[in-house]
Image (cartoon, rainbow, N blue to C red; front, side):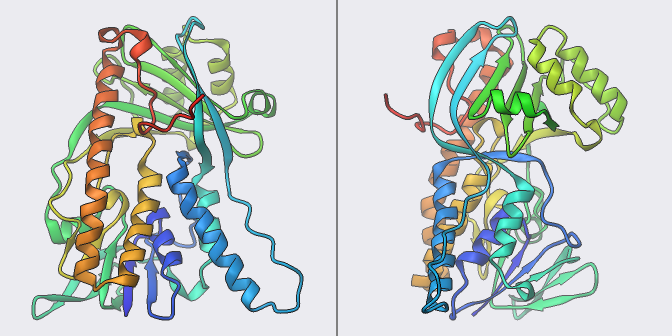
Length: 380
């Protein structure tokens, strides 16, 4: 069975790795040219990390089986940096929450993409392929067509091409996005001293009277991933003006701690971007005939939950396991039944966290919910 995956991001690469099996021929079609994936970094929970650990074990066992008599194979070291604590403070330094976290990891997107790429044969991934349309024969999709003129025939087609999925639009029609009412500036700063000092802690500073917050998490080496969430109805900026964006961030953060200013001072704003948050209601199905969606192409929640990458990897694991044990139609249905319930809960949680962010005074500080997917705290 040939499976054509459209989208070479985390979701598509994870699925391709999990389908490395004699029963499947897999082709990953990536729109970029020679790219290991864009974006900055993200938090991944143990649900996603368990998929990475599964891939590490699969690779190790495969290598061991072909190295009889040689030295033992050392299992892969997972990418990223462990995040063990969450601290929420007000701009004046008052700590509202300090909580232990249950096995979260901060991972650079490029680092994870390289990790997943490294486990796939080079011929599996085809780049410079931006999807345009499907080719049908007797009402059944038989091939995917791309802007560069390439055509890839297959038996099953997987849309793993992100929140603005062309596959979803081609099969399900236009998506009714719901504005998230919050924007987020995302950057990566390099500061060895601060990275070492705050290693393992997700720090967030948030105003108690309006929608404005700054968060930062040490990543790999001397880098810190940071974000500034703000209510654009209060103030906004042209995202295409780098100098104006830098001044905008400094202005909004004027009354925040010196730590925030230090991070902004060592940030490269030429690589910093503004993310306009949005989501959409859970689809009535993630599949249609021989096409199925995974990751953000299938479901999109607001970023307050930090669930996007974890959900993409769990989607891939569930779908891969189903395809190995069921007929495709049955596999697709079981995949939807399991995953739609959880992503619907994340969609609801993301909107609830957004509402608290926009009007924090409506909720007592001790009732503030940690801005991550629920029930992931380590018991004390």
